[in-house]
Length: 504
Image (cartoon, rainbow, N blue to C red; front, side, top):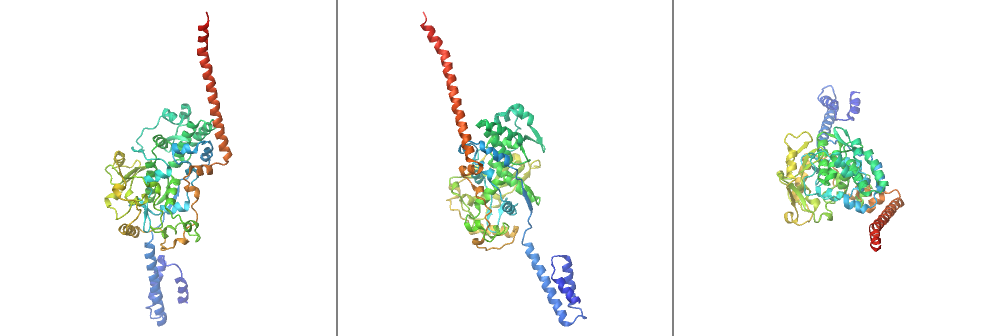
């Protein structure tokens, strides 16, 4: 009876302390003289097998890093999308402000993004996969958002808080309204998004294009590019919008939030999620086999099956781009976000911009620095601001021809890092790509054509055409009225004088 009941218990998990104690007891039966010889041998062999299984399980568990629970700040953009019907010239809007409209329709896949951040490598500030590394770069973010990186110091947080007069000049809103609605949330000043949406609607209906676009773009900056407090556009977003050099801050916010949440073991990542999503899917395999996911594999399984040969590394849009390789005294690039500062390593991303990766990079090029806003004992912020006054760029003359390859010494170094850092999921490779990936990559997320993005935003194309016709008709009427006023003025000025000269 003891043997039978123990055999049933043997089928249960061996991960608990109780099961290990049972192994010890079972093994002791093999040496108990009151147990028949055959049963003693069976007890010994079963206990040994049980111990071996437990040891293998522990080894397997040690080869896999525990995953962390992350979430993402995703504001409600319904009212903001409704304002797009007042954008009368999408091509002109893109030329003035960049590719902001597609971000309104980009729905970041929670499963995909939750998987991506599990691969964040806090040592090298990148995403480390089994045998390749990826990291968003300044040049990629600038291309995806359609805004160039200006040769100047980006947002640092040291700028003065804009006055009501400066906000009025920026947004064309009445100063009394700005003063009445300026408030403070979470210790930071700003304007409620409901107030700004209401003002944008007024100017949109009045077809006051400059005022509408200024408010509309500020809302995009405050709610999408630099989300902080729900339904609130803070002064940091206002300051960044006024400088029109948001890309370094966008990338800084991404890295700072990823690094901070990784260090704390999970939590809410606060950055421009649509932009990070567009960046990642731009590097995923573009084959139908990967997109269709006939095997219905989870996102947690799919990246583990990819090799460096499967990744879509390079876009010809970067053919003439020079890499911002380092700044000032730093051997890499310091980034300042709205909530802290961090370094990132362009040397690891050269293949993403077309240049070769030949060997493992020098440790000095990967020097990592990080600080949270308000916790900067080494005065890193001042050093970072000073460094951005001297930007060092590299191109073909320094890095060689663009052949987009990675040589074995570099790949071996990446694989060694992967084995040391461990991967967060099972390691099913090699898995043929023909069975990889569900089509959870919506096409709307990668629209770069402003006409396609615009069409997807409009509920009715006739509404857009009517508003454009109304604007042109209003401009025509205004020009005719101005012409009539000028004619009357000229008549009043010159006709009486000419008549007087003819009188005797």
